[in-house]
Length: 116
Image 1 (tube, rainbow, N blue to C red):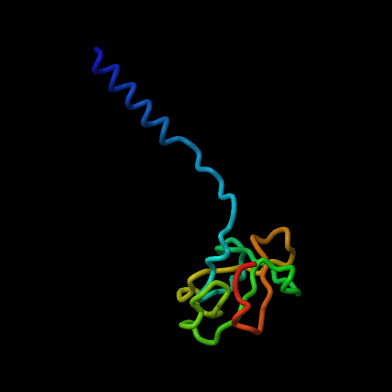
Image 2 (cartoon, one colour):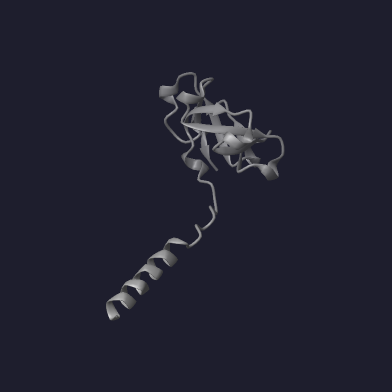
């Protein structure tokens, strides 16, 4: 009888532990975003939602657009690809800042690329 009770108690503990809710994602680690980027037309398929700011001082990240995917190897260096299968990340360009995960501003200097 005590083995049945112990087994039942064990099963209840295991089942209860598996039903705990997953904590929500509190923040987006956009500083790790680099490489081949595909711009999605539908926000549901995107990994990140991004707002493009006019001023670098107001953006969370400065982005330098590379001509070759091999050179997009540091934070803020992006190579825009037209093929979704070749992309490391997929982004959606938001029109309003409150709906975006973070904001970017394009820079012409490679040394300025990265997180703010």
